Length: 224
Image (cartoon, one colour):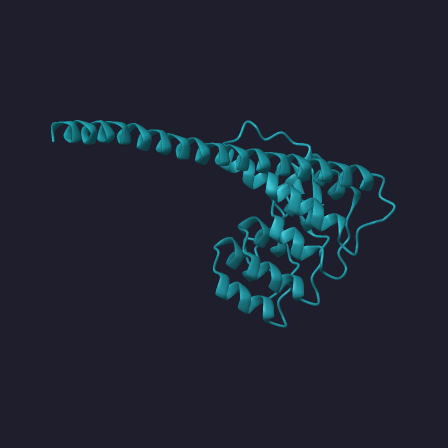
């Protein structure tokens, strides 16, 4: 069951590609299935997102249950990922590039994980990326994911203490948190100003309505 079929795709790869999760889970737990058998590699590394390992496919599908099952497997090879930009990258790098914060948080807790220099560099670049070209909602999602990813990498037991970019990542993370806090405070301030303006408008309207009533009462008293 660990061998590939006539099209060079293993049963596990086929199940993951078709998102048949119960079948994939059964194959992952089967003792004869090679959970590291990847897709065929691209010719000369010319294409991206090919040659994916089962873990890379689960990461791309963002199926956390399957990812955790693969990470818990004793034979998992965390170094395997897929081809990107002409070379093979690790699954952790793949998850970082695609802003998979929950996946990164799960992976950095795994035994045997290696946090390479390119992963740290990419996390720092994400913190410094200006996503202003994206819709506001998507900007928020990406910025929050970048914060979670950088924090997960910096606090991971496997984080290399001698990494030359460690200080820069910590600084970028602190600056991004400060910017987020400033934005949050501004939003609260605008909300309070709006509430205050609405309250003042309501008081003014009530006062204006009370003036004619007082005049009516005065006229009625004079008539009597």
